[in-house]
Length: 418
Image (tube, rainbow, N blue to C red):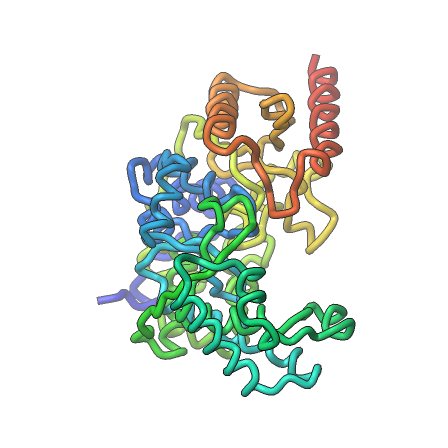
C-alpha cells in the first residue's frame, strides 16, 4: 500500500543542503552509473523522456547513462522500441514504447490548438478532417515513408496555400496541422528521414496505435508520477512548466499520486518547497552522497537541467557570479553544454568539428577523472556522430563564437590560477 503523507519519514530541512539535493537528483537521473547496461526503454523510464529538437541530446542521454551507442539507438527507433513523439505541452520527446499511448494523449490539446490559427484564416474543421483522410490514404498506398514535400505533391490542391497571412501566423499551408493532429491521435508517426535523430529531416508513415486505456485525469496523474520519479522531487511551478497543466489540474494530479510536500533549508530555483513521491521521501532520508568523483558531459537540454529548468541550482555558490547562465528565461538555461560532478556544474563545453575536439572551460581546473571523461566523450562524438548539434539549426559556424569564448575563458582561468 502506498504510504500516506503522515507515515512518510520526512528528512529534516536542515539536512537538505544544496550539495545533497544535487547529488540526489544526479542519482535519480541515473548519472551515477546505476543505469549501466540498461536498454534505451529502461533509461527513459527511469531518467525521463529525452527532449528532441533536432540535436544530439537523445544520443548523449543514453550514452552517458547506459553506454548505448548511436547504432543501437537508431535500431531501436527502426523497431519502434523508442520513438520521437509530441506529448507534454505539444513538445517532442524520445520515449519508450511503454509510454506511447498515454503520452500521445497528453499532446492532443496542443495539436488541436493549431487549428485555431487556421480557423482565423478561413479554414473550417471539415477541410482539415478531409485532408487527414487523404494523407492516410496516400501513406497507405506509398511504398515507404513520405516527407511533407512528397505528400504535398501527391495531394495537390487538397493542401491549401494560406498566403502571406498564413506565413505571418506560422501556417503556410494546411498540411502541417493535419499531420500534427494525425500524429497526436496515433494514426501516423514521424520518423527520421535518414534514420538519425540529430538531423531534423522527417518523413511520415502509417501507425494506427491503439487508444490509451487511461482517461485524461489518469494520464495527467501518470505524467506527474513519472515526472516526480525522474526528478526525485520538484516545485509546483517546475512541474507546471514541464506538464503544461493548469493549477487545478496540477493539484489534482499531485493528490492522485499521494505526493508529499517537504521543505528544504535552501531556496531552490522554484522556491523552498518540493513535491515528492512518498517512497522517494524515505529514500532521500536514507540517501548518502557519493564520496568520489562522478564526471559526466551532458547536453544543455539534458533532463537533469531541462525537467526543472534549474541550472542555477546546479552551480556552487562561488560559481554563480561567473558568466555561465544564459541571460534569459529567469537564468534557467545554459549557453553551452555542462560538465558536471555529482550534480554540480564544474565547467562548460562545445564540440569543434573542424578540429574534432571538445573545447572546455573548467572552473577550477581539470582532474584526471575530468580529462579522462572529456577524452571518452570526444572519441564518441567523433566516431558515432561526427558533430554535436545542440538543436536543428546549430552549425559549426554559428557555434564558433561560443567555442572561442570558452577557449578564452579557459586561458584566463589558467592564468589566474597559476
